[in-house]
Length: 443
Image (cartoon, rainbow, N blue to C red; front, side, top):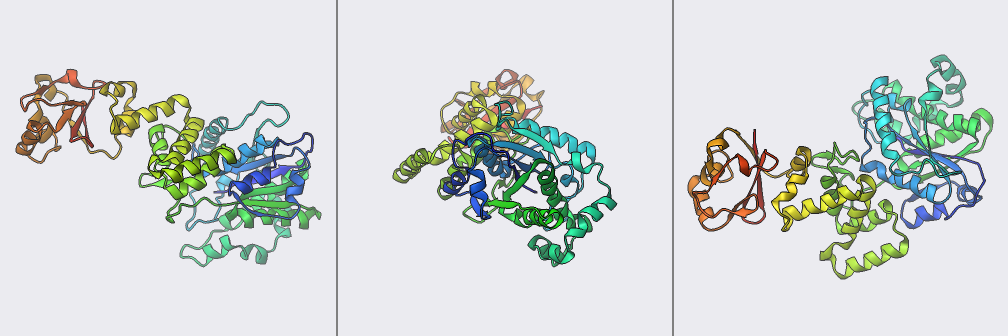
């Protein structure tokens, strides 16, 4: 996917903070061309970052670039969010080992709408001179014919120059090779830079460090085509300390869309961050100032078992992505499973949220009709489900006080459960001991 900024050089108001310095102390800055910081320190500039619309939601891997836009606006500059309606049809080969599936215009538009709705949660689109704005590179590519493109753009960049890029060499030397479509991607993205430089006086492009090659192609196109001058800046790629890919779990991507990743799972993703990663993530993904972060780090070092950094990180990001109400619900969900929140809490959740809460917990489906006559606890847990491997083991555990249904200890092996015991008319929650949960779904 591509993430890139282009800065519109319009100097009107004084900035609140030094944007580059903000990235630097947070550990986000990677490379910067000479003169770039001086350009940004002259006053307000407008800039954009590009988001690849391969899905109708962004995921946490996009958050680092979103945070860059947020800091950019907080520094008094004007952020532009570019959704790559055109480049999304081609596919960025950077860091990829296989060809991307191309999307239809209809699918792309659906994805663009979803991304726009999410970005509006982070950026202020109505705050005066530095209000955020969204643009789509499809607008300047839709009427650009192939012949015009190879005449006006392709002739200025040599094949030798394009072949020297790591993203191209890695794919050509790999098992799958590289299509002409992906080979031309750097020209397409480079033309974004040229078009905005030409029409809006854009002089700087910024993105993740894996985008350096594409960014430099844009600066070269500007230089070779119009003898213009342009600049580049890149940010660090986010990595986990154990070497695994950031933003992915065994269940796949962690999305910003609550329909794809529940707020509870989203909260748990950040809460389960390792101590080492939490120290870098709290700088990258929150808006806490340096003094606040250093204070939290001191608390963490003094009492690591309290997981102060993880809790502050998870709270801040969950609230900004999903809101205060969903954060409180995520907290209650955690306390439900690991604390003393009553079973009534499940009544506050819809089916999707209940299933998300018990994701990874063994679940069983029983026939709703079986509960009309009533099921004794032994049959429920050892015959109609497999919570226990045998009725004998179930009976022994019940008699020992180690079984609970809906957080109430089962008093006797003769206890009967009927439809009126179902939570939300559908669920029973069984516990074997304190920490072993089982979800029983009646259908």
